[in-house]
Length: 98
Image (cartoon, rainbow, N blue to C red):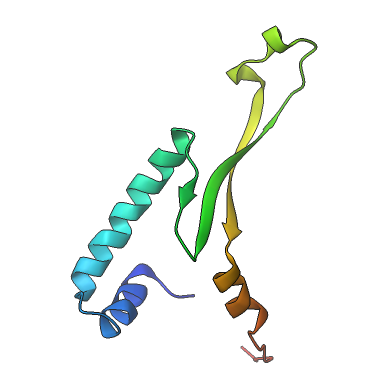
């Protein structure tokens, strides 16, 4: 695992932004991203990918009977973009012993 602080430190090493500023931006993203999803928007993070909400619901006999009470589960869905997929596809794995 890697935590937010470790990510912020790594980003700071390859950019002109301090780790504290990076951490603040990552924290803000965690607040804003769910709000945008809840507003029904797809959040496009460029070459990284997109986030959207996917729902499961109970069926209804008529369109008029469909409402928010039909929703049984809400799940975030991430769709990686090509550049992100390429990095993952080219990853080599080795067995470790812990």
